[in-house]
Length: 286
Length: 322
Image 1 (tube, one colour):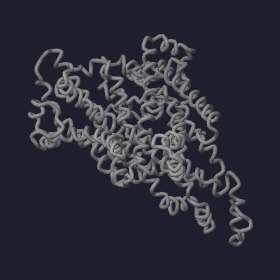
Image 2 (cartoon, rainbow over the protein chains, first blue to last red):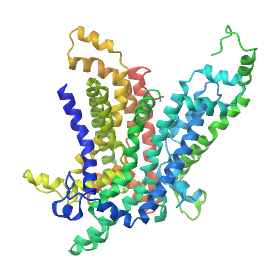
Image 3 (cartoon, rainbow over the protein chains, first blue to last red):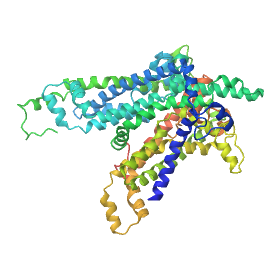
Image 4 (tube, rainbow over the protein chains, first blue to last red):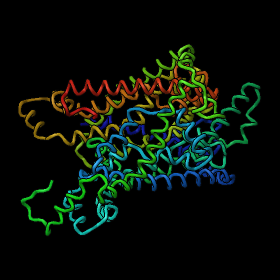
């Protein structure tokens, strides 16, 4: 038993230590970090890195706004249309449900891949530098559809049937009965989906050239690239680190990570129940 | 199912059941309307690109579109297979994915079995919470954290190595340590998520099985290998089929972000998806890039069909994907 806790505890520490390090550095003073290197505990406790970021906050605020818009619209829209489709797919009396289920599943087995998708988005849909280029890719995901369908299949046929006898439209049955009864599953999918949107940088890398539209993760990636580029130049010309000092410095970079990853990590424990249950239902029935 | 022996509400149930039989009956039209938005998105975003795969056989020029571009037969494939990087990226992709499947499955199952031994509910929940933390971080964030450990000026790793008498490593210039680093990071990021899947399967095992085995004098290891692992096989096989179907697809974000795109590491960190990305975005070579994509998709499709068929042959109907 002790061995069990030892192994699990050790891995648990591995999971949490990097985060502690990031938070510690973000609350350390820049000069202390530069003289001692990164540490696991804050040296010279201060919040100056955060005030430093917020002093020049225009880009950060824009990046936050972009991420929030994309995450909110994408999650709401995606959850709604996937839930609607899942309700139809979950009903045996829906003629054609097998064909449609297959249509949703097949892209898991075979896909067009990067280039045709890129050409479709850029040339035929004209979505370069548009929020929709960031929203469309995750909007409908076969896994989420199957997860919701599994939840909805568990609702007894009698419930649906009795509502039909009372003359309800399917859309009414869906919104008044099915959605409230499967709210746990819908919450799980909304959480999974919002995580996909919030953590996305790949679609921005492909479709966003306008810096004003960059979402948070993509903006961070750009900052890292710039720092690295200047450091390379710096070592090449053998100069001191003067150029680098204008950039978000060591502590500010970690403060940036805290601000980007923080919202998800703070929200998640409140929804952990839905989340773990969602993974389970999805893996067993889906 | 409708049971004619149960009295119906003045026959309207029977009437409804008759009406819905038609594909274009009232209820079916309503179902179709509900499914339409998601279906439209799927057709546009997932099916149209499949048609676009024809550009693998074309000399695509963005100015004139797909239809007007010239056919060039297998020329794009020749370019790809003639490139000296094709062997390297294919080997890296396959080996990394195989190693990820093996290490990922073994650690996830081990953690699930260990967690099953923990009886306190709050301890179980705490471990789950901790193990899932990495799952919530984007590869960008993980890349920055890794940079915090490894960077040459301030990183934590080199001072520790030096304290134990080793020599400092130029992490972002030396490809040799990277297979190990990537393997570890992959396990670190996904173990929690996969553990929950296996743990859920464990919770479904009838506990009397273990009690019976105990009465027969089975020890802990005996129970694990005779009951737990066989009971986990159906789930493991499904996960295996899925990952084998993706074996030619690398987790692009991982390789791209963790290495900080350092060109010095490509020998051991370049993968097919990254190669495709460079061919498209940097070289603007649409033809070759989509030829690689088609090669990936077709092999992935064949693998998933074959493994699914093999799983069905070996273990009956319980552990197959479709």
